[in-house]
Length: 251
Image (cartoon, rainbow, N blue to C red; front, side, top):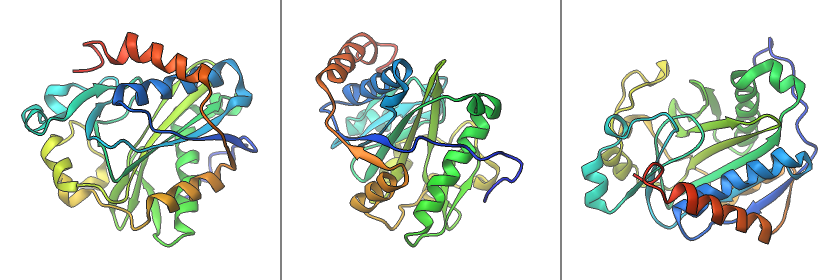
């Protein structure tokens, strides 16, 4: 799993931890950006966040095209809204049974040397090792997928600023995989290990619960749990109103 050609990264000794799900998809996506901006301004505020919405919605990567990545009619029939996020990566369906996590971390000179690909590899390896210590043997496949028994249960994406980056991931543990297969089109790009498998044959729920997944990630990143501040909430509200509630970001 490890790539011996990449030097080891010194991650923050600890991070702030937030377990906060806001009422709407737009609010939750906006809070991700607010956390990134917070760490961009002050690296000591590096953080790990968990969230799990009660409603289903689709989120496209920044450069994805809705007409090729989403079954728009199936989403409309199910009342599922479609959003775009600021980070890259592929299109995902989010909702109950999918634990979303994000890391907002400062960028070091080593990060810049390794680049997005190298940093992603190291970060995903760290999480895969932590999960594997609790039962399922997890591998990193493709660019940034977490895989169990050759099936994907986690997709991940990043956005880099000058001094900080945001890593966003999903962890499927009790998700409606049939709904996922109906709402998402076959992706325009696929990793080699997928081998053209359908969503239903390719995606799986990992046999760990939401509480266990939270605890594993919290311990891995030595997160000190805290409440989201009023300042962060206000910043998220402003981003939500100006970005995620616009026609460009909510499709």
